[in-house]
Image (cartoon, rainbow, N blue to C red; front, side, top):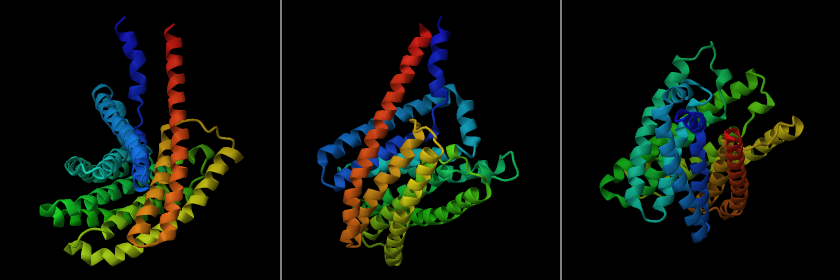
Length: 351
């Protein structure tokens, strides 16, 4: 009598996706976009949802580690899922950046310390495991869009470090070094990871079901690189920043252009998947990996436009936030409906 409810309750926890923190990333970046548009009430509402989702997912992942450690380790050792653990880093930083917009500098600094530490550790552990424990001779066939979350995590550290730099005089130089360092690492990681993803697409047949929403991170990783670059450009004077400010400003513009170019290609991939090959558009946690890039593109346009005095780019960002809001709303409703159906199904099983 006591074990049956546990058996019925645990499977969802056992199979909790390590990439579910993308929900927090998507909601937090929409909150930031609303704040940049001056929509204070909406920004607070989205930030509240992001904080609740973040705290809930932290608790659930701790519980998963305690109850289903083998399942979590299996995800960590699987190249197709391992890089999704970087969503925790990005989610922590996205929430921290949003809280910084409300003057909570101390909380943001604490979140940066957590995210930066986890990023530094996972940045060696996950690629090492993916390479050293693979079962086949080539890892290229296991690559998917979630590998780009590694880049997003790197750039999220840069964003928060650059945001905090003007507010912590005693740590200004260290924060400047951290921002430029992680931004630079993110640039190199994007070049390397995008190349591996391109090889995957070129050398292995892509089945329609494999072209999932996680491939939108190709654009999201570029967009957050733009945001990080624009934030670095706006930083106060520091030796590390002064050396690269012009370079970062120019690269941020180039990256924004590339992110814009990627959007029609990704939309076309969705059409190929769902309309040509009739893959059902059902709710999965990976959908949040599409919402986040859309929100990040909006924020990137607004931040870059204001930092480099590009009013057209800023206006595109201001309009694009409506796209992010619409897709976030549809995805959130689909998630709730999916949960409700799953709950009804489990109740029916009990009866």
